[in-house]
Image (cartoon, rainbow over all chains, first blue to last red; front, side, top):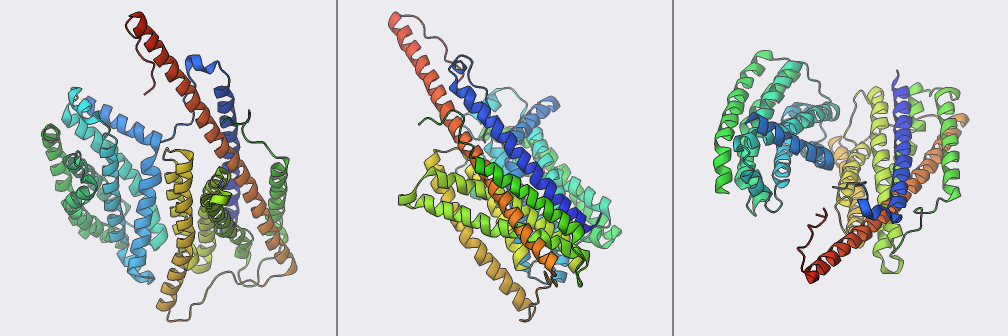
Length: 53
Length: 222
Length: 265
């Protein structure tokens, strides 16, 4: 694989992976928001999504 | 003792896996040291290549201090250390566990630093086994000495300034020997390399033994 | 402060930007790798110049503008709004990805062109430092704090970074020039552009800029959602705490032993 091919490949793959990652994160947090809004969650506590150090 | 060590190592590593502080703070710091040292030595490519072994080990040593600080900090919550002490876990086990966890992080760090130095300073390690052996031996010594001195400074308010001052001089032989081994590994001078390896062995053994023996009493005194 | 039911609105235009960006990128790659001729001087290596400079421009200028501008607008009392803070933070994260890509594509170009993976020239070195600073900013951002406190802290950090990078670039440039005795020849990026090459170059800039905007937008949405969930979780756990306390008070009044508290740390 030439340097040029490698360069294109890395750039495209990285952006793709990051983009997919962002979309998945957005979906996960939307689900989390929906769950914390329904009153049923108070009884068993919202699952610990989004641990932050 | 060994069982306790595995427990403690597992705990420390799990905390790291969750918080990823070593990954996102210590590793970038190591690269920062590489960049700063490059600035210090100047744009001459030949000078940088000659300095590369020393730069690797200096960056590693400074990062080790950070890793030790982090290792101590995970137990600095109120009563955590007392809780550990009263839990009946063998203090030697705690020492070994923490040293193992730090050691593992240092090994990963060295891999990254190795790649970084190769990349940034345009050098190539030719005698790989020399460099690898040096790293393994040095890691034992760094981790053991580091955890021990971490325990020394643990409860103190001046811990952040005191720990580097205490531990870096102690780690100096590792820097010396390590740099020489790497020089040999880059040039191919196997015999001189093996001579310097011989310094790393007693260093590792001494601090391993001293740590096992003294960690408990240190904890009592804190 | 209650967030809308499904978090931030999902504006249509953002997805359009994303799609157009991807299409433009596709064309750039196609043109860049196959249709355009190799350069007279650099040969096929010049094809990397269809992606490296656009990525670098995004990483340095677009990201810088949004992060610094957003931080300024947040700190300025008249325009203070968490919108700017969240936008700036999103730009920094996307910027870190682009900075890393700048370094990688730059090295891949540099290795065959200069014979070495890395040179300590001003552009590469300041991008490397920028990446480290961005990582630092993101670590700072993760420290739990009240949104306004965090916003102020991060805004100051971003502005300091924005001031620092040009300084670093200038110093390193001078550092190199003095060493080379005053005649610093930038060995890079000299190509003789034909028409198709120029158009592809321009298309590359457009493509990566659009992709940056889309990534920024989605990252911003994630940021808003995270804060909204944080608020909700806080409200829920506060409500649980009050319920527990109420139970205990009632228990005391009735003379029973208080029930052991729930798991809230």
